[in-house]
Image (cartoon, one colour):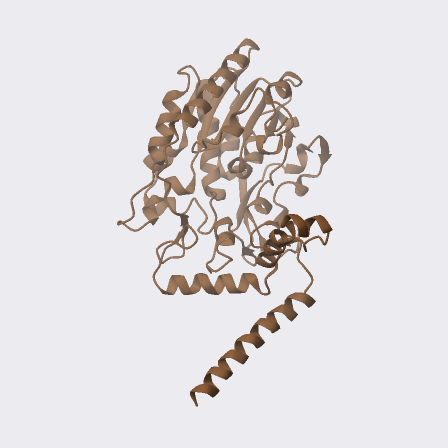
Length: 402
């Protein structure tokens, strides 16, 4: 009986391996992973040289790992098992009982990188000053640092406050600074903070971004004599909050967990009531486009899934919004940004004649200083989330990738 059992197990195992091989062989290779938002390894090349230098096996291993049959389903099952076993972090993420997702705390303190980044911002400040342009620094509140209260009490908090304060104190004292991280923490309770961020994404939502918009506008009005505040456009009565209750939100953190967390999200954006965004002249990467192709695409398509990038503005190399209503009275602003600015890009355009958004992550082939030299701006706003210490996005004087 024992021999029969062992034989059955062996045959089943071999059959499983053969079945997986056949399934993998007849299943077309995928070019990209919807879940991981990246390109997948293609089938290995059969070049003779690849067999000689071992490259074929390396490529085959990457291909088999990426193209393993039902890979996403297996990984999702693995995560559900780990969660059922009570693991605190799943692939570096924490999921609360209410299905809030946040990252495992970062305890690093890259003092040299932070100081270097601050020095480059100060250098940019001096360069712009010589051109008669004022630089303003704003940090937007990142969910991970502002919502550490989501973590269990026994988890040591990250070093985010220490990192931020080191960076801010390293900046030249003459650079106007708006620390929205402290503003959010000082203004909102934990319960209120949950109304300002997505549960399964790392960004703020429409309501959080609207608070950011009003604070930025009022702060610029107090800091800059030539800035003409449009107070009526700070009032929520000037806007209509439109939502998409019948669609599914795909959060960035949930994608990293293979969409294993099921929860409801508010999928909303603000649209003006006294005018239309159609009144703006929108240029994406140098070409005039309809605003619907850039902002709030989820409201104009039948796509069932909704992303942060389709609710608001997607990441672009360069986005310029001209507000004809402010011609002759508004200023021309350049906003150096990351993805957090995408939720308030059209909101801020209510306060300037021209608002240009420049994302260093998509401008690695050109220097920011050269870009400014070739354009006409009245002020420059550096707006990164809570501050990033990645040196590449602080390379203002030369291309990131020559």
